Image (tube, rainbow, N blue to C red):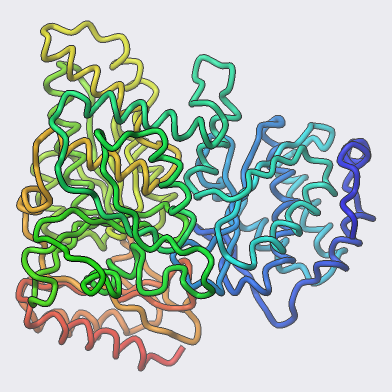
Length: 558
């Protein structure tokens, strides 16, 4: 189907939905039979080959979302993040650069599961009525995609849906997920006192690099490079773009796993999820590089919105040499640093930290001695919302997805404060630069990478110094394939199963066998699986506990 004229489609929208175009679109992009899609925290995610109908329909919803928001630009990102290359997904971005308002998720689910055009139109009309949308309001949508081979076909379906609704279409092309979030916020704030940055990819690099250089320029440079595993994904291109703006005298980077052309390479044996889950180096690192003990390393995931750090205490072949510095360690490092700056600046700001139940127990204890800590269910939308309740909210999931939010009042306080000393003036200057450095719309591997480098450089710390703040309790995260992940329901911030009935009691019995143990089970939000987290005081007991709980999940008939 040729794309309809957005001008003529927009004119028709003033009188109602473009039903004829929607009928044609559904005919070209029919919903696969016997497939049920769900729009959740990570949008819709499944095999890329069956997602064209989803992309067409969510495009219609996104145009309506823009109309609801008075014509502000919203975003769509085609990616499956850390999932295997054959998977793909779509997630919507709201006008402030945050995730789609949760009340719209059910409307998305209804639209993507409509079996024909009439059902789809009915679902859209229900949304229009419920949300009181004025169809004559213009719509604007920007979309981007990662490196997956299914992206071109999915983006074509997106464009078709947006054109049918008469939306102004901005094709951002190949982008990291955080870059797409940045573009949405920058487009909507351009020309205002709250301008977030130039709404281009170059503007993104310029904003981050200028803030980073201002923060590290007075500190001695590090002599060793930061080794970055780009997961053979879009983060590789983004890192190259960043390096053009930051000279090697400020940041020496050695990029690894940058192959975006070889089929199947994306996230295979590398990337943040692989390193975190397996608690080991990316596959082949020890053979390809002469890794020195203490050398700083990090891994992005496939769409560069997660990051984990790590280093070796000794030779790669030596047992227990690998040391992981995950999202919990990043949160602790960032919270400590920001609290120190706030105290030096002499301003009244409440700094808090948000974690999930899957944060390491040692990190929670460490943070609770320094800042208020809130526990939420897994999912960025939950952590982000909780972090907004603080003046400065630090949130990271253990998987390395997170950021720091400075409230509007906190930014105003920092900007208007009168320093009482040169030290206070310097601290205020650093806090102002941090506001610019940190991507506050969403977790951003590149922005978080620079934040960690700033803190380590300011303290003249190596990876081992950072790691020494506290000792992680032995822990393990397993993925168990199940028939129906949605049968696993939780309460108490996902710390307790309420369904399947009786499974939690069995887990509690296993946990009671081990010293200082915890174990939680929850349905994955991105894959057809259940996640099992296990933690205990004694390392030799960890595998027994994790395996026992995983077996209980496998044996549950759901």
